Image (cartoon, rainbow, N blue to C red):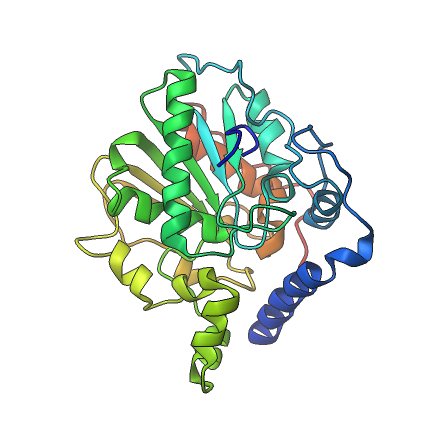
Length: 314
């Protein structure tokens, strides 16, 4: 796909979050034409809202540290980290905090926009099987460029669900050391029953599939979710970590947890910092979540999160 380096009451709040995202997609033209600049590094952002706004004006922008062609993994972090966006989003809007911080920690960080459409700031809307194939091709290219044997994957929201198809169906498990699913509906999602409501309408699922195939694939009980769980959702050679929040207003807490297994660790923000109130959109800009993710990537240097800062607010 071109240059590889280019590459919330709860039900009501959940609907509001989805509506806000859809409105942003439809209203993108209202913010003026995007700058004709791609694949340049944008500034680090303090929160998701300014990050999304910047990415709308600068489609294709990279977060600091991502896709450095000269980065070679060292002995402390021998596996490159591939960051995977969630539905609607892009690599800059999602990772403008994580990418620079993980880079400072010594990780080689890579990421891509995938899942269509190719142009514009919004991605990851298409068929999740096709998305998984794109991720697999990108992983192979990262391994070839860096000389590494495996990568670690960190996927936000739907980006933490899609890789299960790459691992379980496409045979990618031997190329992945750790999969971190962040605020991800690893069991499939209901959107606090919003998706169930759409399915109950005449033609509801068919219409949603025409507009947003990723949402249909990601729904609990879908053919996609059933397929990735066939024979067991996890593979013995991969380490799995889920990081979730009980105040997530899009992915219900139980949807973000994998079944217990020796190679599975389910981490909840509030178990580490009870006062934390991170919601779905803030998870990739939350310091506690970042610490838990970096601990998952390098357990040998894991440190407890600092819970004394201001908690994220919904």
